[in-house]
Image (cartoon, rainbow, N blue to C red; front, side):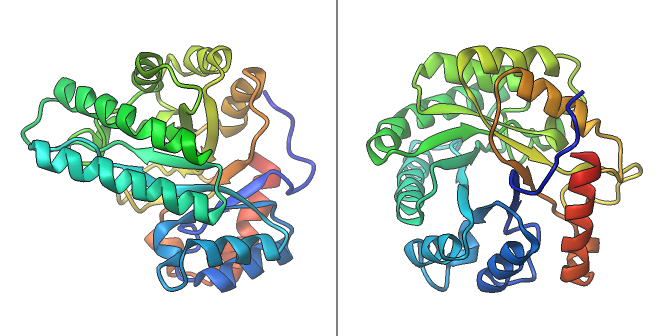
Amino acid sequence: MAPPPTDLSRLCLHTMTTRPWPLEEAVGRYARAGIGGVTVWRDAYAHCGPQAAGNLVRGHGLSVVSLCRGGFFAADSAEGRRRAVDENRRVVDEASELGAPLVVLVCGTAPGVPLEEARRQIAEGIAEVVPHAAAAGVRLAVEPLHPMYAADRSAVNTVGQARAICSEIGSPWLGIAVDVYHTWWDDRLADEIAACGRDGRLFAFHISDWLSPTTDLLEDRGIMGEGRIPIRQIRGWAEEAGFRGFLEVEIFSRRLWASDQAAFLAKITKAYMAHA
């Protein structure tokens, strides 16, 4: 098991975690709290553009860790798949303007498309985007989602499936984002994370907690230590595999979004030191 953090330098917050705050307030609050990095969601810079958003983040002394999100490659028509590839190229361009070294991919699925076919479409779509990403100097990270999302959000549901796509494409610009919320249940997780390390494909690590009982499969994540996930154990596996990047807090919670966001941020930093 990994030792507890000694400071907040590796702590990254997704702007979606404190969704009620506009980007300017979020970045200022994160910086004053001593947080090291920010993963920016595309909606956060809709009012100012990615270049201005990146300048804002760096101006507060924070690192832009990644851009969320690209993906959604599967579709029930060739035209839909083409639109997805074009959109992902735009996401890469935005990441370059933002100064983000990484784009996280939520790979998508489509009603009526069998999972195996959706995974094939996802691999083909990513393969078309990788050269554009490499030319821009932006890495891509496939994020496997919990199987509960297989019908409507992603046909990539395990780290093993994500590794298979990465191996098929074979580019150093393509890797994996391991989110403990989506992967903690997998009895192959330790071995799969180790394999990601051997392949040099462990690009990102996201943390939150699984509440039991949960009231919403999408928007009822917990703060670290509130739920069932052995976060520090999984982080230990990641670090044994060579991961030294940011520990990214990504919490979707209507309950917590409705709370005082300054108090929520204080709870996050306290929980990070105790449970990350």
